[in-house]
Length: 283
Image (cartoon, rainbow, N blue to C red):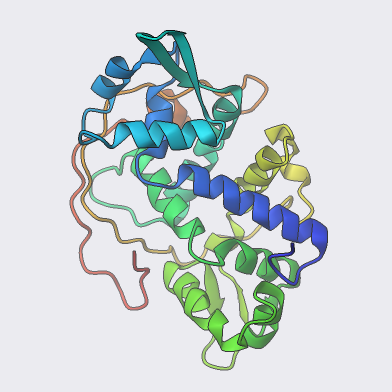
């Protein structure tokens, strides 16, 4: 059943990417997958790597990731069970460098370097806002459009004014721009700059190599000059472990030099950001 008023192929693409984001955005999911890089681990070994999780949190997370096809549970004997990344998870985690590259350009810069893993988590939070993917798709395809026309494409059958809460949130997040009330909406440079990330997520969710991301019919070609940096508030988080991230496919060019360090580098507890400028994004 169609989720939007977009053409069937585009509607299916948005739905797949939304589902992919829903797999990894929940808190700690990416960190658990990264902790499973390398050889499969027994539960106690994995728990030691993600020791900041409280008792009872890890098991349901593993079950959810297993159901999503990202974690493989292998029962060698009733008392010997191991967990490891699936090939599907390894490929999905190859999108992380693209997210960090985008975050380093468009998210707020602090006095101290923000851990790459937190940049990933903050970026994923923006992308999983309600209706965010569909709104970004429509604006990328149309260039700019009114709120009413956007509502007809994103949430057909609903009161068209329902589009404004998620749309205003994307404006606050810095992904969408408008010149004022009654004026059309369009992607900001930060929103348009998501092309490599969304193209890669689309390729992964469709079972294609990530090298096909550049051929995406909507996000395949992005060339927008940087504009005002988007701002992102952040809450203090538990320090991350010192785990080496999963290897990335050798046929891909490293997007940025940050890969030489673990995703968990600079893993000191981040301070809450200072007051944000007017219309800064909210979490």
